[in-house]
Length: 130
Image (tube, rainbow, N blue to C red):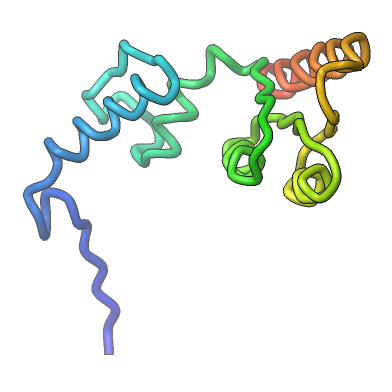
């Protein structure tokens, strides 16, 4: 028995234009990226995540701050440092999901800003090594 794998869009279905429109729209609505090159042959890795990493590269010092488990999971998948905001059970869940640091709120302003600065410099440095 042989395994046969099919590409879906353009091979089994005529959805390439719809896929393109959805991807570009998500970049605009979620990230505010408006100048997306849609000639996919220009990207070294032509997958949604590969294109995202290429478009995201100029923002390599990004740190995300959020309060949801889904925020932490998305950041982990995209290798973006995540600072959680929450207390009690939520704080524990955010830490388990990979938050680099969890603050109850923004009352520790100095420590929050110091953590933010350290993470953004660390993130930028890791993505710009020779």
